[in-house]
Length: 423
Ligand code: CTP
Image 1 (tube, rainbow, N blue to C red):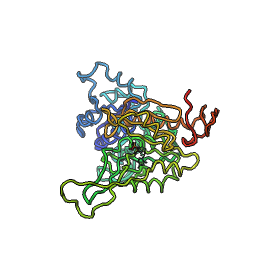
Image 2: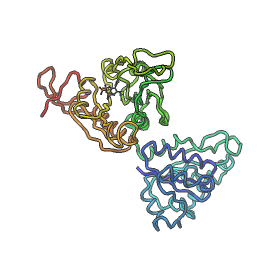
Image 3: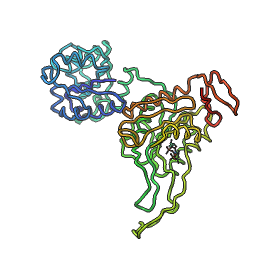
Image 4: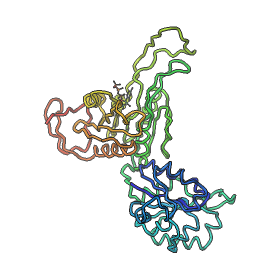
């Protein structure tokens, strides 16, 4: 979905870059427009680089199409002004259209949100409050400023709302789904590290991007999220509880101690399958060829399935480089998860460390192809399919060797009790 972020000329303009990032983390395509005064605080280049789009600052910009305010007004699915100065609020209230942002306000039919930021006296002034009232009555959503120390040194109302609050308001007007409200989603992400000595470890290239995208998507759809993460350089999603772990055993302990709280568990982490039997207390010295003895780690996913409580959904990932479907299906059956997201980790632009990914969402009865897309978008697709598992469905399966038509099933049938009948 496309959102236009209007930046007007106040000191809080620098915070608009954070708002832009936070909106992008919700898989929104953000285009930025600025007033002339805003460009004195922050260079348009900053927003162009972050958004990946040209920043419009003038109605007379010859590098764009002639009726750009109309085009932009029609393309935007929401217009959010952050920060909104007293001046721009006054212009909006009185229909003054003397630059791109104010002209766009009149030209768009998209919902408009304003996040005011100004000195407390300017905020309290009857003129500003009257203008806000006009805007509210016209359906403009005012994201109330916070109270605290202002850039001018005074204390009071006028601090622009936090980026998360602005994003929440934008998602609300976009009618964003809230279909995970009331759920607790436990997500594992990143790779684990198994120490060899004080400075070396066995690890893998997992970045955590897919797991973090899932955590963020679940959180934005209303879930409480517990993110159990191996070391990752990725910016952590806002408003998720993060439990940092390093080794497979630490991840296991964290998952087992928190799994009872979860209604849905998504195991996106690339957990080490082996750890060195002995960890040297001192740094290992170079002494010619070396053999490292490894011991298998516990399979956390399989253990979680064994300990699941009724109603809990469990979804695993399968990182594969060959025979994707066959290996994925075997993992689904072997581990007993409700679904496995099969990833080709050898392809270009997909899998480990990439920003995009493609996957197959595999259950006992379906294989849903998800083509290459940004990981955050894929996260929403995966959540859609996970939620679909809860919908009543017609299933043909074989129980204990006897063909059986299950009819309407409210519960997902654990894999260990069912095998698919080819039809
Ligand atoms: N997994 C786990 N604990 C492990 C290894 C893997 O919980 N010790 C989980 C992963 O988080 C993932 C799923 O199992 O959800 C599959 O992981 P993957 O590495 O693809 O499979 P493995 O079970 O390790 O099998 P293999 O390495 O032989 O492909």
